[in-house]
Image (cartoon, rainbow, N blue to C red; front, side, top):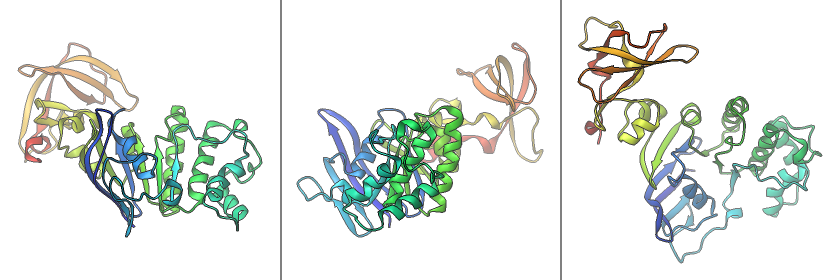
Length: 327
């Protein structure tokens, strides 16, 4: 069942948190709302969950309407059949792991088979032997697994993730990203994930929805939003961008070459001067300036270059992206 949002809008006082928005979350897909803090992504997620009431619009999943507009009857959060994983885990400190995972089942007034369902969920997240522990006895990664187990124990139609990895350190965040994606895929879940981290969005998602200023700027596969951005903000927010004409014509740093790849295609050539060199582990990241260009560019090189050295660079015509042509 697809989640369909039409004309959704939300304001807080005189501030618009979400402009009028239409979008569809496809059944069985991992969809990510990506954008900076304050862009409206969490507000949108909370309205889908039923934790905020929209000012206008409709929310439906399959043939069931969850919200039909102001003044209409609204399906409460616990009856929407959605699981939710919060940024701060939101575990009850006085409850055991078992009771935390069982909480959603009991809230839904389920009485039969709770133990078997909880233990199955804990086994899936590799916490089968920790049912009687309390949250303070767990690591951050283990607490995150409990939160995920609680969300999926109710067998949700949709799992909502509100920046669930942001409280973890970098190494654990990467481990949990891979583990969470594997669990979502193995269980055949439909997921809507909120993050400001482009690496999370690009590596986990079937579809990325880029937001800023309360608006959806672009939706598409990770390859589409990176390779064919429609908006200058999207081009700058996802990856690095070099501009030939500000906000209109750009290319990605990896497409600036030191030796042409193919003799048969047209290349633009540039004399560049290296202004900064950074070691990235698998390559060096350069900042270079070019005569006639207002902005410095980012480029990559396999060997260290000296600041002040002059190089010849090549850019294929087919690697130049014109944003005004995609509007």
